[in-house]
Structure formats: C-alpha cells, structure tokens
Image 1 (cartoon, rainbow, N blue to C red):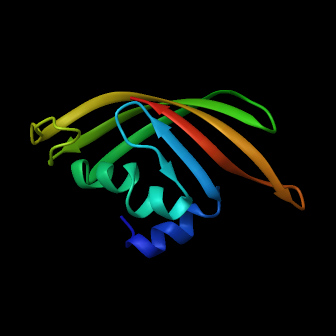
Image 2: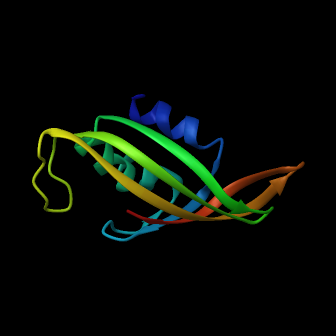
Amino acid sequence: FDQPETKARNVAQWLAPEFIYESVGFATSQGLRHWCLNGEESQFRKAFPVSGFSQMLFFGDESHATTTSYGNLHWVEPLLGIAAPKAWTYFRVTDFYAIRKTGDGTSKVHYNFMMV
C-alpha cells in the first residue's frame, strides 16, 4: 500500500475534504485525512495488509450510490478486539454513499455508511 500521505492525496480524487465515514464497529471519522490516516482505513490496513476485493454497484444516481464488495483478506493483526487467525478469510461489505457536485461536472463522495 502507498505511504500515508500518498494515500491521502490519491483518495482525495474521489472523497471530499469534509468526508464523513460511519460504520458498524468502527468510530465515525470526520474528514478525509482523519479517515485515511487515523480512522477505519488505517486500522483495517494494519489488520489486513494483503487483500483483494470484487465490487458491484447495486444502484446509484448523481447524488447516491450503494455497492457490495466481497473481500479475500489475510488477517494478521487483531481488529475491534477480535484476535487475528493469521489466515485468509472472506467477508462481505455493503456501502451507502452520498455524493456532492463539486463544480465543472465533477462530484465527490462526502458521506459513506459501511456495514461489514
């Protein structure tokens, strides 16, 4: 994975600076940099440093979208108080997004609710 600052610059292409991330299990992150460098994304990458996902868009329009992903992950560190099995595991993620126009025909995600 990219270094933290590089990762923050990369995801800024899609996520608004005021991005809010809510999830079942993880604390709410407010702000793109917080989510990317200190929030769920950071915790997730420590627990699952190697992963692969397949993602499918359920539906969406100019201001909303929902997706589901199936992950194949190597779980090596504890997560949310659950001991790591130090093995490959599978799980499903469902995301709900709110999207805001940012000008000149572009848009960014400003809200994400995720369920594992």
